[in-house]
Image (cartoon, rainbow, N blue to C red; front, side, top):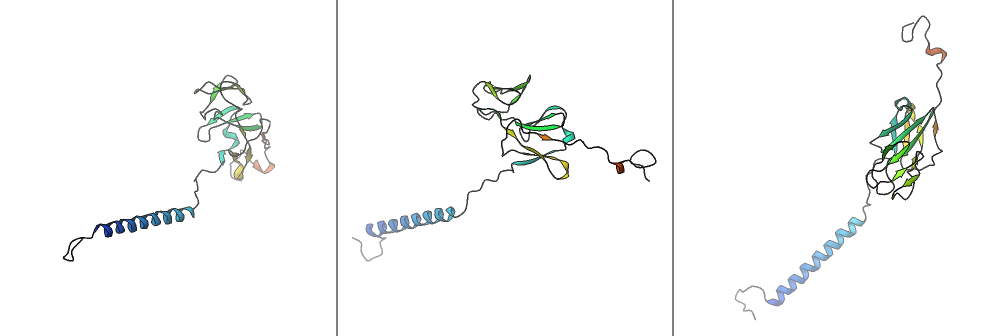
Length: 173
């Protein structure tokens, strides 16, 4: 028992203080968690539609774009985009002969992206290509299409007003 002469709190008062403090901390933690639940979790990811450049940038055959991890395949006047991400564990595949090869676990893919060997469970996905504003190509990495889907580029014939009278193009009239 404590005397009235100035000693500190007794055992009962100390336990009461700890209980009130613990309850206050618990209420505060739950209030913070509840407030946090009102804010949505948003991942800031780059857009899936990517501008990859003018059609003239891509020669006949395969062109690898490291930033997008795709192969742009140009055949005559058609353009297609094939993912360079292995469907096994996400490694970047490279070209090998007429097809593709994953250096991580040995998966192989045919020229059309079909899995031909190794642990890859499915074919490499194809992505649609379209012509955007300004004539540049846009690939949508969030959409998968079949290997038969290709963008056919229109061959641009020179217009009559492209040729200036009186000599070579670019000379003043």
